[in-house]
Every structure is written in C-alpha cells, then in structure tokens.
Image (tube, rainbow, N blue to C red; front, side, top):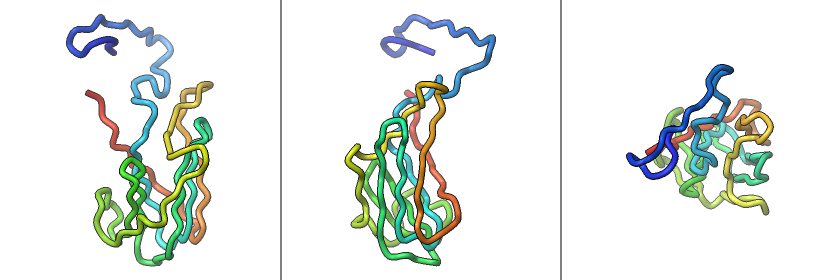
Amino acid sequence: MWIGEPNNSPSLLIPLSSGIPDGMFSDAPVTDPIIRLPKGVSSASVTDPTSNTGVIWQGAANANAYTYVDVGNCLAWQSTADHQWTQSGTDVTGGLDYPAGGLLQCWPNPVDNGYRLTSKITGSGEPLLVHVRRAWW
C-alpha cells in the first residue's frame, strides 16, 4: 500500500497477523456501480445505509428483460442479455431518481468495514446484482 505521490511515496507497513480488514484496499466510496434488476421489475430503490444515499428506478415492467441502472453515468436500460454492463437495448433513463440524501455512494460501515446495500423491489422476488467497475491507479 502506498501513501503520497505515485511512484514517489514511502511504504506503509500493514500488520497482517490477524488478516486484511474488509475494505482495506478499496477505493471508497464506490460511486459507479451498475445494478442489474431482475426481469419484471416495475420499481426499485437501492440505498446505502452508511451514507443514506440511494438510487430509485420506476418504469414499465418487462417480463423478458433485465433493467440495468448505471449509477455513475445516471443511465438506465433494459436488455434481454443477463450481462449487458454497457448501455444497449431500450433506454429507460427517464425513470431514474434519487432520495434526499443524494445519488448512491456505497461507503464501508465504520464498525466492521463491510459494504452493504439495502433494496426494495416491486415486481420480482429475485435478488438484484451489483457490478462494480472501480479500479486503482
């Protein structure tokens, strides 16, 4: 792990005797997740309980297509493909909104360093899937 300027930084020794804490090498907050909602969903609300931020999507349910919500770019689309992580298919961005706390930012919980999201989905009992693109320099 480095602190300071890239390629010109002092090393930081990390005591690993008890393992690497969750989120230690993360790039918090995660601000660019892509959320895949199950087929048939007409509304969904995804919230980070740590930051009280979130994203909301409402629109026409499509029993044959997944709804993808790209939080970082504020886009939404429906596609029959189960791994369509880039925008393609039917644009449904008009159904996007966010709560008063602001647009979704996923922060680690300060108690256990875990990342958690809560969700409320209408139209399906299936779980959602979150794809995170964040990379380190």
